[in-house]
Length: 145
Image (cartoon, rainbow, N blue to C red):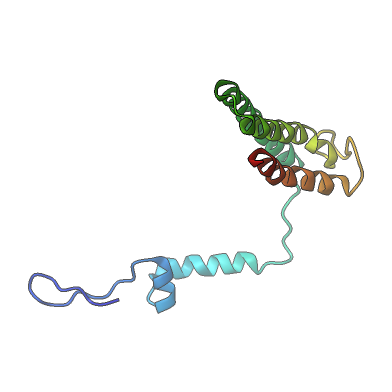
């Protein structure tokens, strides 16, 4: 980075414009260096396990299901007002995702009943995860046809 000139003609000290420039040039502030050391130290502590939070899967699924339901409602309403079937297909895709997300927590141990899973075996949650994530690109592709 070139030095900029002030009105008196003297050059102003070069300053990195971004954090990447600061680290690349080695001229970062002391606080930035301390923060980077803290991040590296946190990631290099392999013996510390985080506690299990089974309710997180339930909360995530319920919030995502609500968002998918609202999006499905908006898409179906837009399909009714415009008469285009592509919006109806997208609305159906989001409705499918809403229903999948409502049952998703049932496959996690401790998400609904402490210490137990309501449905399925150990691979069921992973299979439902794939069914959830493959539905969107397939639904978008189907609506474009």
